[in-house]
Structure formats: C-alpha cells, structure tokens
Image (tube, rainbow, N blue to C red; front, top):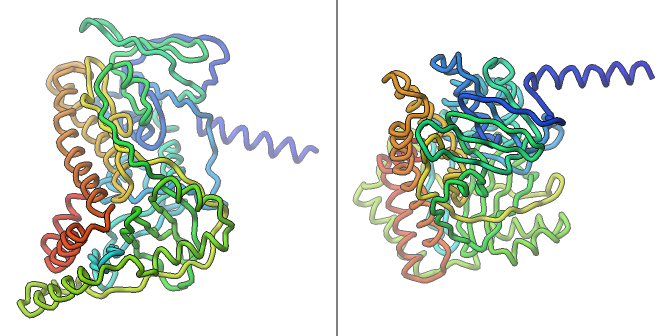
Length: 462
C-alpha cells in the first residue's frame, strides 16, 4: 500500500512539474494578459512556445487557454493521427526546442515518395536513389503537442490553463479597448491581443463575424496503423489516387505504416465496420488492384514516356530516384480503424483589431498533400515575425497595421497551396478520359523534369 501511494505521489509531482501553470479554475478568476492564445493543439502550443522564447516579449504576460484536460504522453501504441512535417516545420520546431523531444520520443523520416494514378499507372517520384536525404518527417500529433508542452514548462511568462473553454469573446469597438474573454467556469480575462488557435469551428472567428468560405467534400479520412510485410528500412511514403479519393501509406517504423484513406462517406462507414482481416484485404486491393486502369490513357502515357527518353528530356540528375518500386503488402492492423470528416474552409479575414486567427481557425485543407499543420506552423512563424517588427518600430505588439501585414503574407501563401490541393482533388476525383489524359501527361512530364520537381518540393516546404 505504501508503494502505491509513493508511485501515485511521484506521478502527481511529475504532472505538476510539467504543467507548472496548470489551473483548473474551480472558482472564478480574472486578470489581464498582454497576449491570450485561445486554443491549444499543435499550432496553439507552438504559438505559445514561439512567444515564450521571444526576447522582445520577456516582460509580457501570456496565457494559453486549452479546453481539454492535460494528457500525459503514452507511447505504447501509435496514435492514429499523424502529420507529414516539411522542412520549414522541422526548422521551426528545432528553433522552439521541441524537435529534440520529438526525436527522443519517436518520428520517422521520409526519404522517398511515390505517387501514382489508379486510372493510368502514371507516376511521379521524389527523393534520391541512395535515400541520403529526408524530404519529410512523419510524427504523431500527440508527440508534437507533448514536445511543445515540455518546452513551455521553461517559459516563466507563459501560463497554461487546461479545462478552460471560452464561451464568449467581446472584441474591441475602439483602439483603446481591450479584448474580453469569458470562460465556461466563470473566469474573466482581458488582453491586448487575442490569438485564435481554436480549430475549424473557431469561436473567435465567429465573434469576428467574418465570412468563412466552406466546401464539403462529402468524404472521410479512414486512418489506421498498419503492419507491413517488408522488414527492410521503411522510409518511403506511398500515395495512390483512386477515383474515390487518395490512399496513402506513411512510414512509422520498420514494420509499421500509417494509413490515410480519403474516400466517400458510404465507403468510409463500410470500412469502419469491417473486421481486421477483411479491412486488411480491402487495403491491399485498393493499392494493388488495376481494375480502374484506362488502357487508352495508359498507352498514351507509355508512348509519351518513350518519346521523352528519345528526346533526352527525362535525363535525370545524378542520384535522383528513377525506378518504380512496388508498395509493401499490408499483413494486418494494430488496434482499430477510425475516421474523421474532410472539408475545405477559409476565413476571408485573418485579423481584426487586436484579434488574429492561426491554423485551422483561419484555414482548413484536404489532407491529400499533407500540408494542413505545415500551413499552421507557417502562420506561427509569420505572426511572431510581424510582432517583432511592430515592437522594433516602437508600436504595440498588437498593432493592427502589422497584423494586416501578417494577413496579406499568409493568405497569399495559404491560398496558393489550398487552391493547388483543391484542384488536385477535383482533377483526380473522376474517371473521365480527358481528365485521366490530362493528369497522366502532367505526372509523366513532371517526373521527367528534375528542376520542376525541386520547385514542387520547395513550394511544399515554404
């Protein structure tokens, strides 16, 4: 019994140390903070870390409000939600001190990517033949968030409150007014700058009364952790464009990959109800079956490929990967499958006086290119930069003119990526012969032009 209480005391002490600023607010509280971040998650915690490391803000008080409870990281099983981080996101996490925590936990590098079309077998590959360079990193969402939380314990000016759901925002009518925030537990706070990282159903965005453009894909992403047959180094990401939506296998470890299968809601619900053995068979069928092949499109693609070889247009740079590889076979699943709905969303405005949106609160994207959290981390870096510019110019950290600069910068970049991803979704969501011809020619030609592929990689990392 004594051992039980000692272990319990150790656990509580560890949690208290990690969440130095944790307050459960059983009684109403009030106070003023220079900056309040509404919403945690990966992007919200990254924003808090970024502001907490900013020397220009070392005398400012910052509050992060997280509606959910604190959860200690459990690495027993892989989380079903993972991210494909690009280089810029990795660099940001390194600058925040979180990347080393991620490495100490677990992550998987992607050194090659192979994407192909179910209707023509046209493909494009990214990466070097000797697998010497990483092009992305697969990391579980909860690992990223926990790593950022660990860093926050060292930021004395940042307070974190869990179980703190905001139920009302009162935004300023005049330049001298503060933002007022009311929590479900009765607490009240004021702030000079409110940052909304509260997800795609953002309450702060609704309080801004800005137009929000949405599109329902009528799709769901089915996710699972897969056991694969190959015992060799698992460093390739695979994505096949099916007429019903893309299916992707992302490397987690030597014998495990993460499944992200975007498909219509009816099929998704069917897949969720399948026992593991049949679900595994359906995945292998989707990856290996050629029943959707359009032979006319395939013949044209092959002829174009041969023509490019003759013309030497497809002369690849030294060590660039140029061989089609066979994807791994799936032999089973770990745990169970799950699904989440997919949609497109974009806020016409990211900012209003003393108010700014980041991450999914400002924009939501289809996961087929894995850019969602990367766009959010880009928001974090850009907002921190304009806050620095405002302070360096002698202005307040929430100066509206500088917030508008953040909006212009991020909308330009986010909308470009979102338009491309949305266009790819429309282009690959049909068996129409003209569309199959168009996308097959595009893949084949692009795969033959190393400079264009480098540009695509750089754009995805920007």
